[in-house]
Amino acid sequence: MNSIATTASGGDTETTGVLDAVIVGAGFSGLYQLHALRDRLGLSVQVLEAADGVGGTWYWNRYPGARCDSESHSYCYSFSEELLQDWEWSERYPGQPEIMRYLNFVADRLDLKRDIRFNTRVAAAEYDEARNVWHVTSEAGDRFTARYLITAVGCLSTANVPAIPGLESFAGAWYHTGLWPHEGVDFSGKRVAQIGTGSTGIQAAPVIAESASHLTVFQRTPNYSVPARNGPLTPEFRQYVKDNFDEIRRIMRSTTNGHPFTIADRSVFDVSPEERLGIYEAAWETGGLRFRAAFRDLLTDRKANDTAAEFLMNKIREIVNDAGTAEILAKIDHPYAAKRPPIDTDYFETFNRDNVALVDVHADPIESITPAGIRLRSGAEYPVDVIVFATGFDAMTGTLTRMGIRGRDGLTLTEAWEAGPRNYLGLQVTGFPNMFTVTGPGSPSVLCNMPVAIEQHVEWITDCIAYMRERGIERVEALPESTDRWVEHVNETAAATLFPEAHHSWYLGANIPGKPRVFMPYPGGLARYRAICDEVAAKGYEGFEFS
Image (tube, rainbow, N blue to C red):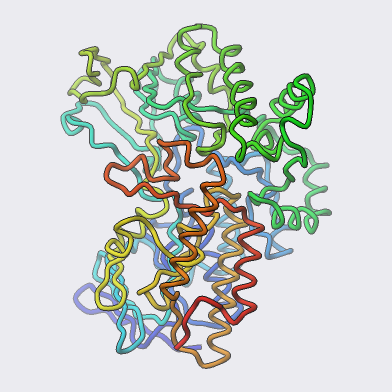
């Protein structure tokens, strides 16, 4: 293990000597990557984290109703039997505060915080070909040098605040759900506008409506949602998880989406319409993402998907009392689960409240924000005291391209990805030697239960670095032809699904003006992806160049 010291001069900090690795981010990915490299391989590692604590996306996303949509007993690390036995979740779907407690529990138990530099946002990372090292500089001027650069910045970590004219003139307060004040926001007696009805907006609206004097939801794109059926976990279930986690882990690692349940081995038209309706009703009552697993062909056959879509749209019409409002909510233009499939607690029921209104900004778009509120193209104005932007993120690539990463010959990552993200296995970008991305574009990532995908990535990266060290190999880089083949494979796999039919999806980057329309995550499933990565490693890391 290298001995690394830091020196301070003029307010700057600089590492003396070369670290084995710099990891950017201290969420689920960064914490496990630190543990794997430091405690398994004995490497010198420094984690750089912009926040003042661990948590990653859960540190910033503290909006009302913030909750995971993976079941708690699967939304955790599975590499440590001790962590599994010593932690207990309280609810079926954990809320943000509980997830933060869990990640701090892990960081403290594994003594990870001593190697994390908090309040340190990366401003630049440049590859030095002559020395075969990465030079990383923070916004404060701190400098670090390392053999490996590993980005663990998350897929949903750069907030997207839409450039609506007049926002700077607004006299009230405005917030983005992904940058929520840690002290919270008091909506009591306030007229609130919520812009956005994706997964975050669907979680936030019911909670905001409980305290606001009035909530107006501005919806551009209607969305499906299935009840979460959240509730406390029984002592019996918690004990079942502890006693059977080997089998739960096996299921998570062998399924398409990394969840602790399998997809039914039947197609939609294998059963009668009456049976199908009964299956959907049972899945609706069970709740959560298990609804998506009712049939195996929901994301590959449009006619099959139409049966689920019709069922869910009819549920909206049953729940929402006002027929006009129900039709605006149910006028959905994409296949079910072709965009991120939200789950909710009383979302559609919220529109039955006297203090909640829905505005269709697909029919009448927002033209500007005024000092007093929001004005539509028709001239209609809505006076509000607070605006909540539930408008999502520059997903998967935004944080990476904003980090000032430069590879060989000064090539920036932004230039390399000018036409959309290109890499090999979602792990390495050609032209950027010894740089790895955890759950980057081109990997299953956001289509999965994230901790399961993260563990696979971290373990693969750790094994690759161990392989190199055992053989005295200094540098690894994805070959250009490997990248070409992988990008082609991702596109072909996406084309065999219904994902590309959701034209406004952030999976395609469609929520960011000017962003190339490319399907970013790998839609072939986590189990298939794991097998591909394992085969690449077994063949001496085929498709990578060692030097």
